[in-house]
Length: 117
Image (tube, rainbow, N blue to C red; front, side):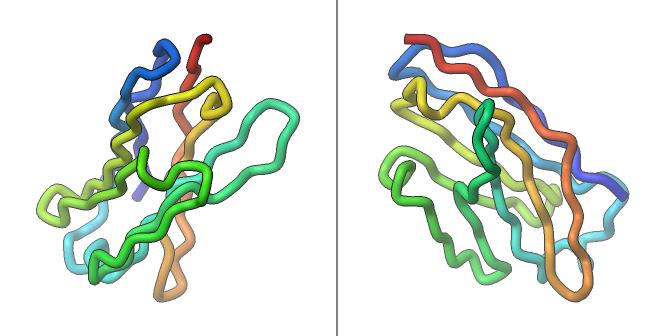
């Protein structure tokens, strides 16, 4: 079982990206009850929480991304998404997804997001 992120890349200030996080090798009944989190780490900074979504689709966001980022999940595909709009250079970093709950704490390898000014 592993989390596989995709969708990162280079985008200009004000642009958009959609990140995906797929739970490969995990059965749906295990995936569905889990909370999914997105984190990011900028160069020289600590990792910070960006957004999360519970099994009941309750979402929360860091103040820095509220109104610009949207987290969602498709349980049938065992995949979570992070839609990022109005990107800023300060959003640059490695974005990682995390799935936890019921004794599970699983991390993806991360995907690089670079926003140029």
